[in-house]
Length: 315
Image 1 (cartoon, one colour):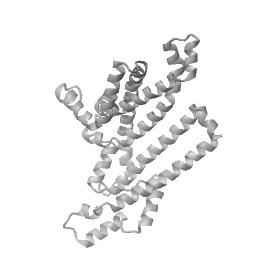
Image 2 (cartoon, rainbow, N blue to C red; image 1 turned 90 degrees about the vertical axis):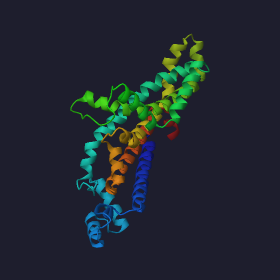
Image 3 (cartoon, one colour; image 1 turned 45 degrees about the vertical axis):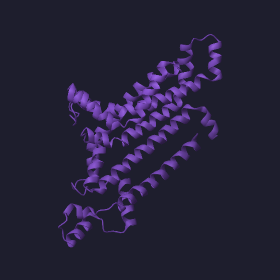
Image 4 (cartoon, rainbow, N blue to C red; image 1 turned 180 degrees about the vertical axis):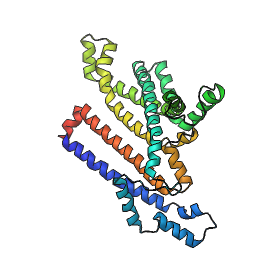
């Protein structure tokens, strides 16, 4: 087990290094000069050169990369080109919207997917199973921003139960959760469809095992066998998917945050791209990549703790 964890830590570090290089180089080759963008088309070359020097954009590529990385390691995310404030402060203000939104969406996804997937597995090859699989296929195929627009039209425009966008702030937790409900549902529906299909498939595989048939032969009912033996073992791959979904929900909510005008990290990245504020984009994207890789690492470790076969394989 320690060797397995050590190997995963090495993989985590290498993934972070590779991701930082890719993020830095991709943003360096993006057309357009941030200094020129900030000063406008009529700016003189001397003014652009002076601003590039002020922003630290005139140094060698390798020097700027290591300066950025060392700053990240010390908690210094740089200073925004546009707002001239520390990026760390901007992240601290907005992360308390993105993380609750991801957690909220994950909870909704799990609450929807578990009973639906279990019902489809128990009613295998029935009309119920076919209907559920058809609906989940639609949920997987339809993009979440389309769900978001439908939710706005129904619950905000027609029924007026929720606001069409914006965030009420955490001064009133109930209003804050209400502001996040429609975005969370839009994010949760496609993920719930995926998770329900995985739950059904995993449970069907487990129900076909020899120990399940032995439990039924000993006199246990179908419900007892399902809850005492099958479901627990079927959850192992499902837990992996849940961990990966949290990473996706945290890093992949850029479109949803813009649809609902939520001042989270996703909208911050979008605004940084449109204003050529590359230090904001680099730092936030790297932070999101770190969160995704860290969650994946924790899922791998949890998988090894839950599944004794993996521990034996590593030994």
